[in-house]
Image (tube, rainbow, N blue to C red):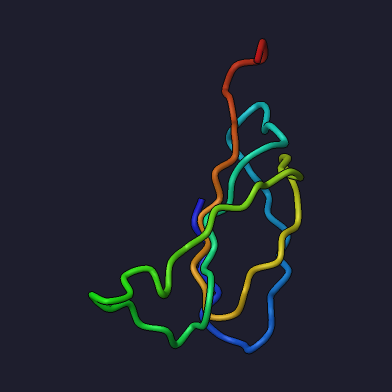
Length: 85
C-alpha cells in the first residue's frame, strides 16, 4: 500500500481501513523518507536522501499512522485470504 502526503509542513495522521482480506497481521514494514526533503543525491553522496525501513507493529484491518510532510510512504502488511492463517 502506498500513501502520498504531498502538502503541509506537519505530519498527517490518517486512519487506514484494509478491505478485501479476511485477516491482517499486526507486524509489517514501512518504507519512509529520511533526511532533509530538499536533499539531492549526487555521485559523491548517493545515499544523502534515501528511505529507511521501520517496523510496523500496529497493523490491523483498521489502524492509524502518521505520515511525514511531503512524503511517499510504502506500507507492507501481512494479509491473507484464508481463514486458517
